Image (cartoon, rainbow, N blue to C red):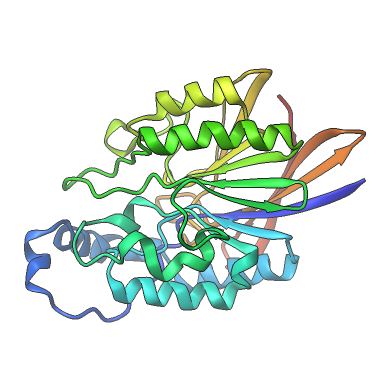
Length: 295
């Protein structure tokens, strides 16, 4: 019996570097987001994020997954800064990033297909989404729900092509006996977030999961610890979200945490255990509990 350890964190919202002035940003969603950042930046602490990242590194997981919103305005400078942060976190072969809505804030001046992050999106730098990575007994299926939206909206969309490829990959990896983990930024369960923040084709994704199945779905976006279940062909599929990895204790949102996901196969059956770790009032990491996921 062996255990594969997956670390899940999300929504780090890295503090933006000094950004150059661009006239076109005055007529885009970036301007509104800069005003919002001024009001809310205290909710995201570089020191808290550094503490979470150090704890993740010290735990030496087999793989790290990050479900989006590394940036705030999706500028080229932020993408480069996030790439530097990712390189400090670990080898790109051991880290997978699923982009979030803030990483696709506007359609202009955003790196094409998240180009600076290609080493962290999947093993094939030219592949589209979903991207498949197989690590030990685990198939990591990296979806992208990040699309530009109108002001005051934070919705995500997968699209029919991505959903069709996902269905085929789920069937293939099931036939190979792998533990299938889906990554995306937006929640999948109905009602997990408000309509203006929702995944527009969540119902279609749930239909794919009901037919093809999966063992676990991981997301961010809500800035809350969430555990939902959606229907699979043989029972319920756990859907797990984590708060922002940079939120200090005592803010409006739940304090930063990350999840160690222990996947064990014994006599052909997979078992999943979650160990939650988060930042306390003194900015030290505290154990928050552990539990087993069951269908």
